[in-house]
Length: 276
Length: 167
Image (cartoon, rainbow over all chains, first blue to last red; front, side):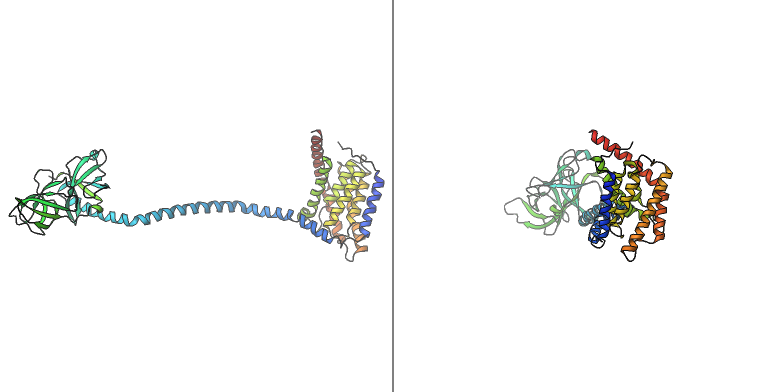
C-alpha cells in the first residue's frame, strides 16, 4: 500500500522552483567551482569500493594468513620448548658423561668382583662431618641390613667405605670407616700382622694393636682381616703413612691413609654375601 | 521521520551503487541508471511532489560524481520525477510495460539533455551519443529488475517505519 506523503505545496509550484534552481545551477557554471567539492565527496566515498575490494582480496588471503600464523606460533612454541630442553641437556651433559664413565667402570667391577654387590647412590652426607656418615638410596626393602659392609671402586679395585649403621625402608645410613665409632679388623698385607683400624673423624685412620716389634713401615698396604665376620678379608683400606713409636704402650700404632675422597663419592656397593 | 531517513538512506545507497558498483556490470562503457530508476519508481509510488524533490537531490548528488555540466542531472531528474509523479495512481508501477516505457523515455530524455547541454556549454560534451544510447537501452532492459528491487526495498522501509512509529 502506497504511503501518503504530506504535501502542502502543489507539485507544479515546487516543480517550477526546483527547475529554476536547476537552471540556475547550470547557468552559474559551477562545474569548475564544484571540482573541489567533487574531489572531497569522492575522497569521502572512495574508501567504500576500495575497502570492499580490499576486503574481498584480504578475505581470500585471510584463511591462509591465519593458518600460517597458527603454524608459526606452534612452530615457535615447539622450538622454544626444544631450546629449553637442549639447554637443560647441555648443562647436564658433562654430569651424564661423568656418571656414564663411573657406571661403566662399576659395571665391569661388579662383574669381576667376588662378592654379591648391590649398587647404591649416595643421596646425603653428614651435615657436620663428612668423615662420619652418609645416606644411600637403598633400604631394608632392597635387602639392606645393619652391619653389611659398604665398599667403593677406587683405582679399579674394591676399597672399604664403611658399614650400614641403620637401614630404613627406602634408605640407609652408612657409618664410615673414618668415624671414631668405627673399628675395622685390619691386616698389614705384606707382613700379615693384624690390628684394628679405628676412625678419627678425619681423613686418616689409626691402625692400632700392632705388636710392639712389628715390622710395619710406611707404604704398607692395609686390608680387612676378615676377623669378626662383618667385613670380608682382603678389602683395601689404605696405605700406612706414618708409624708411631711404641713408647710405654704395649702396641705399635700406624696412621693409615685412604686415597678415597669421601666428598666426591657418588656410588657405593653393599656386599650382601660372598659369591660361592 | 523515520520513513524519510530511510528514503535518504535509499538515495545514498543508490548513489553508491550507481557511482561505484555499476562500473562492474557496465557494457561497452554504458552502465544502467540506477538513480533514474529510483526517481521514476518513487515518483510513481508517492506522487509528483515527492518525486521531483527526490529527483532534485538525486540529481544534485549525481552531479557531484559525474563530469557532466553541473546542474544537468538536477534538471533531468527533477523533470523526470515531476513527469512520472503526475501519473501516480494512474499507472501501475508494477506493470512491466509501464516500467520499460517510462525508463526508456526518461533515459532518452536524460541522454538528449546531456548531449544538448554538453554541446552548448562545454567543448567536449559529457559522453558520446552511442554510449548514452547504450546506457538508456541497458537501463531499460534492467528496469524490471531495478523496479522489483526498489519495490521490495520500499516495502521493507515502510514496514520498518511503521514499526518504529508504533514504538
